[in-house]
Each structure stands twice: as structure tokens, then as C-alpha cells.
Image (cartoon, rainbow, N blue to C red):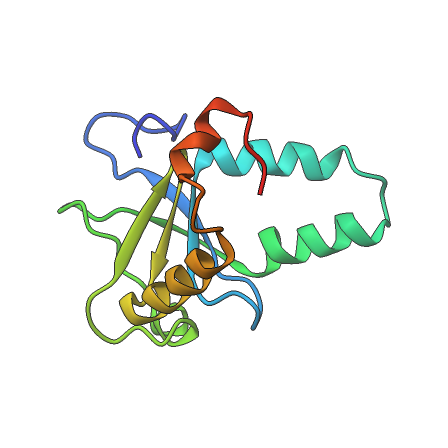
Length: 135
């Protein structure tokens, strides 16, 4: 997290942005400051007034929550975000480079089962790393 926060100094708590989205999103996506700046730059290059730009501005600017990691390395989620994903106990984290997702464990398990059913039985997901396999 510190590496992804250009303003971070030793002794500070790293900043990040949690994107919670609308009713279609049942997880929270956490962006490092560098990652969110990259997204903002892409949005800024889109045609002003376009539907795509408006949708992304609403998602990343209106449906997000800037925060910091606390002194103990924990991320404290406000009730609004916990309620958004129906989180009332343990959380499941999944890393994705300079972002990570926070899921209610049961929701993630259901999503994972659904995704696995879409993948043909004879396809090994590791084959996607070579870039020569399509599903």
C-alpha cells in the first residue's frame, strides 16, 4: 500500500480509495492512490459529456470512499460499506496487482462457483497466462 501512495512517508498511514459502486456490485474494490490516479487520467481523456465518461465519473468519484490504513495495518470499513456487501463478520480479500477486492465470504464462494461453471471442464486457467487460449 505504501508503494502505491506517492504522498506516503515513513510513519504515515497509506491512503487508498474504496470503490463500492451501485447495486450491481456485491464487493468493494480498493485502489492504491497511484491506481486511482491512473483511472482518473483515463477518464479525463474521454470525451467530455459522453455516457462512458459520466458513468465512470459516477462510479469512481461518486460511489467511492477515500480512506487510510490504520496504525495497526487494518482497514476500518464504515457501516455504509459493510452494509453494501452485507458484511457482518469475516471478510475475504482477493488481490489483483495494485487493487484488491473485499467480499463477504459466502458471496465470493457463490460467485466463484458460478464462474467455474462458465469455464469448460477441459480448460486449465493457467493456460491463459500464455495468451494463446480463448474461452
